[in-house]
Length: 138
Image (cartoon, rainbow, N blue to C red; front, side, top):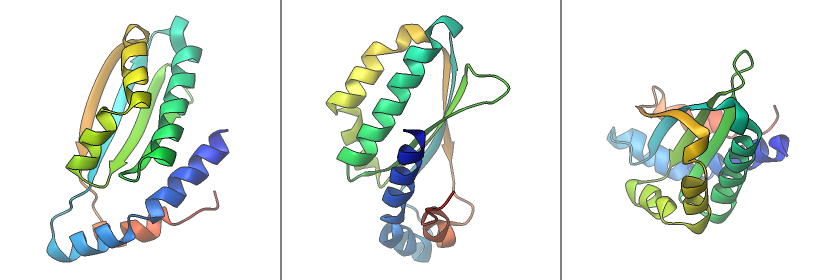
């Protein structure tokens, strides 16, 4: 399932080409990129991992404005989760927050999460971002 999630994320990210190329020529990205840094209570780890994989896969497959929601787990610290999130615009992000699959995740996981920090990111190479995310072979 993780391999199919990764492939779906890369395919969806490839579709952001026009937005990134346009944005890079105007030096103002309309996309939103961030990393969610999450620490999960150990007793809820398996349930949280299932919820994170599900919301990521559903968001990418159902929402055109979601480029990537890619959950990852630290190898040395399995309760430390990082999720790379990329949205086409502020409007796409706001629409994502209102979807049933995100609401289910958001309402069903608070007791599982020890800490959460949402870290806004700025792509350093927006001009070539579309090439980076077109890679499908891992």
